[in-house]
Length: 267
Image (cartoon, rainbow, N blue to C red):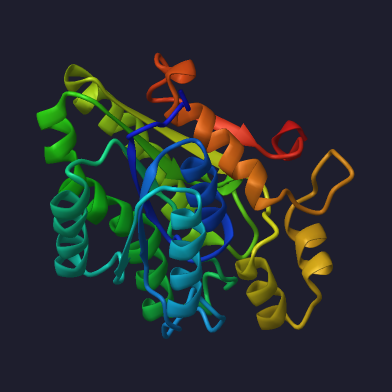
């Protein structure tokens, strides 16, 4: 029997990058997937996000693995859209066992040049977004007396980042939510952990590079400073960590931070 046979995973930011890799990896191990994505460009940051076409090909890949895929489109800032997506998941699949709060943005700005709109977008997507999704999913996990919530923070959720004060604040906030929710939800047998990747080879990295007038390699090397001789890690590396944390192999892991940083935080 596969590790996630008959489990249901709800993944935000699922169209590409880390979310897509995790969705496919979970499906390969027997999970049914609820893929939630904004599936369009938003006003900030000015780079490409997931698309409806990517969601459709993701659905095809999951179904080709013999698993069910529920596609939902919305912005994590929109509580109504989130609630509709969660209700659709429950109606079609009956439960949510795993929540991967993955949707997020990143962009550079100095504190004196940052606009209110830039600050608000970063906090609302990266911090309020996971709050919106989690509060809609948790009642069903409480009813089941079981669940795993994995928050995709960042190495910047454990340190500071140059020209990244809004991003850093959002990711430290998500680390704090992880610890608070772990305490609150432990009596219901719900585990909550956060992961903290270094730079990941995703379309977001490409978008950041374009906004800075740099190549993806240049932006990765400037931003990261990994000890291991790699500019970034791959989405599959993140997916592998998520699968471990969502599995019974990590059954007593809660409230903790799991780093996958190629050594960045060691210096």
